[in-house]
Every structure is written in structure tokens, then in C-alpha cells.
Length: 255
Image (tube, rainbow, N blue to C red):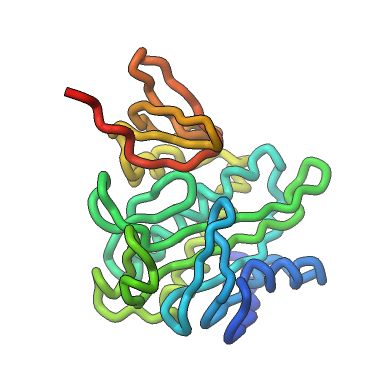
């Protein structure tokens, strides 16, 4: 598959891996070129955000890590997760006719804006040299067809909401959308598609809580900041910008 410049993706297929991120990291260290992608049928020790596990049985999910060399300034590196999240949402919409919600910082939901179930996740590891991103490892996992006990509570899969979806079709759509979103991010100097993200933001306008270690901040989610931070409005009306943390629905107000 080629992008606008005519450069084809290099697809490295593996049957079973610990994680596609591990394989991609090895290939990147060995000099793998931009737009190389590792795709696996099964992974036994996949990782999500904050070291959480993402185990997937044979053939049930799209499991991939793309190696990108985006010529992006280090200060704009955080925009990669926003751009890739939008790309994956676009791809799922292309293939399934479903537009997922984006749950900050890196999950995709299917269902209602307030009460969706996780269908996909994005994990990005950047290697920065000087003031430039030398390589970005873009890990993506999408549940395609799995039993509830395999994916856990609060999760879902595409076949529960759409007709048959093949991994090949979804992979092609994801790569095509990355080819659109990431070069646009680079060309714009790391400026984010904030309005697009906010239009798809899970829990927008709802009381939420963001936890980072022992710190917990509660407020109404008002959207994404220009720098990719999550913006909450406190009870006092102040806007709080958060760069990291786990987002959950906020504690219920007492009557």
C-alpha cells in the first residue's frame, strides 16, 4: 500500500509474539525504515498504558506497531497519540460504519458518549534525539472478534456491532488514515485537530475524575487543549489542564 509520496508500507508479519511493540523496537534499532509495520496474529504479553496487559488470542484482534520517523519536534511529540487516535477512529468508521468515541488519552469506545465500551487502544513510544523525534513506535490494538471473558469487563469487539470485519481490511484502512493524519500533524508543526477530537470526545460535558498516582482531580470535562492536555472545569469555575492520568467518570454528587 502506497501513500501520497508513492512509498509503500513494509509489513512484517509474525504469528505469535510477546508484543508487536517489542518486535518493532528491535527492528527500529536495526534501522528499519519509516512506514514499517509489525502485525501479529497473537500476542502473549502485550502492553497497554501504565504497563497494563493486552493479551489477545489467535486471530481475534488487529495487533500492530508502526515504525514512523516523522521529523517532528520533540515538543510536539504528544500530538502523535491524538493524531493516531483520530486515524484509528476514521479507519473503524470506514470499515464498519461506526464512529467510535475517543477517551483521553488513548482509548476508543463504542456505545454512548457517557457509557461506552473499549474497542481499541493506542500506545506510542517516542525516541527523542536532541530536539527531534527520531522514531515513533505506534502500537495499536483493536478487538475484532472475541468472547467477553477474553477481553474483560468494560470492553467490546467490532463483530458485536457490525457485519464481518477482516483484519486485512482494517489494517489497510488504519495505514491509509495514518498516512493522512501524521503527515498533516508534521506539516502543521504539531498543531492538533482539537475541534475534530472534541467532537468525538467521550465524557465531554460530564463530571469526571483524573487520577495520577495519589493525585485525583475532579471536574467537568470541557475538551482538549491546544497542547493535547485534558481540560476540566472545577466546581469553582477554574479550568485545570492535565497532561497525564487515568480518566474515569467522576464521583456522584450527593443530593
